[in-house]
Length: 142
Image 1 (cartoon, rainbow, N blue to C red):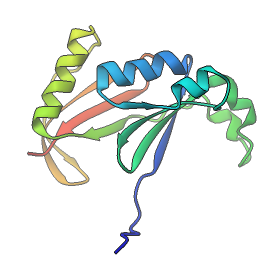
Image 2 (spheres, helix red, strand yellow; image 1 turned 90 degrees about the vertical axis):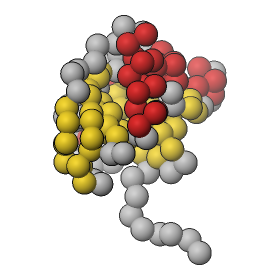
Image 3 (cartoon, one colour; image 1 turned 45 degrees about the horizontal axis):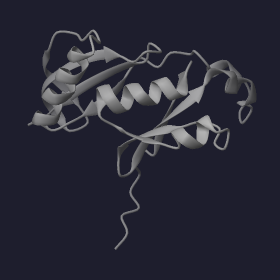
Image 4 (tube, one colour; image 1 turned 90 degrees about the horizontal axis):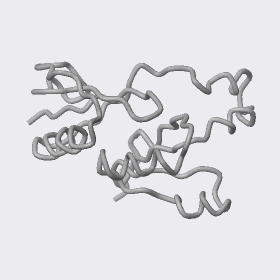
């Protein structure tokens, strides 16, 4: 049986250097890079990183903004801030992420406790930025 419920497919992040960004997400965040070699060879318009089996982050080069004409004003979205994207992890993965970020001297916030989210109250969370200034929250519920 196929589950056709609504899900998040992808988030597009504007980045200055997609290859470097893919490296950050692979090494610091622990995500699987996709199409990086193809992008570097000019065979794909952007690379991505896999968050889970159903969701990816597209790492869109800033110059692509000029081609964002699918809706009026679409090109203006480059650099338009989204407040943050929240990643929900298991407890061990949550701590491993924080450790990898700290090992790479990526600034992280203090912990927040009992924050409301999609699955109720999260036990702990913290925030960090990627090299392009996109803000992420990491949290765990268990």
